[in-house]
Length: 248
Ligand code: SAM
Image (cartoon, rainbow, N blue to C red):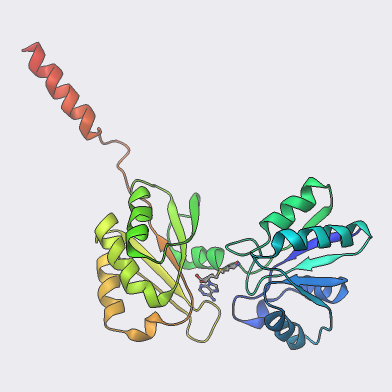
């Protein structure tokens, strides 16, 4: 049946594309993508010739009508983003919702995702985690976001620009404390792939002495708040003390 395929593409190393992704990209009637030039480059690397249609945050609603109409005509469409899995901090949510609401077939072609790749090598608990997407670029907003997450016990995954890494880690020290464990996963699957983990304080010092760490793309992973489940919360202790004083 005609299908909207959500196709993951590599996050750096082109060899990470799946055989299924290549087949689908060659077979569909049109490929919706963020940046047609970028996607044509990817297609030519695999000797695939196909039509592309640009779809970004600003024209997604208009494109969704057009793509739904193609699917109703019996055509198949692939959606790709510039890198990794579409919809994960990338466009496509409105399109997928629109198609699902109309009972059109939507099928995933899974593959690379920077957040999951980073998590798989971070060495932090992965049984439960939260994906927080991009951290705000301004320090005030970033500190507010981090403060809200101060008591989060799950591992937290963020996208951020390495050129802001020093400012971001400084904000982590201020809001979550210098002892909090942080993993920086930079340039995954590429030549300068670096995964560095340390306390926020030590990570900051490490970044400050190596400007090369501020280049490329990165995922930041922050350890969840380690609360001792057997500890009696401070407010309960205070209440008990008051009660004890009353009893005397
Ligand atoms: N949809 C993509 C995915 O599945 O990972 C993410 C798109 S988002 C617009 C781009 C962000 O993903 C970058 O700013 C960076 O935080 C992260 N990223 C993408 N490729 C990466 C890589 N090779 N290494 C580390 N982080 C990467």
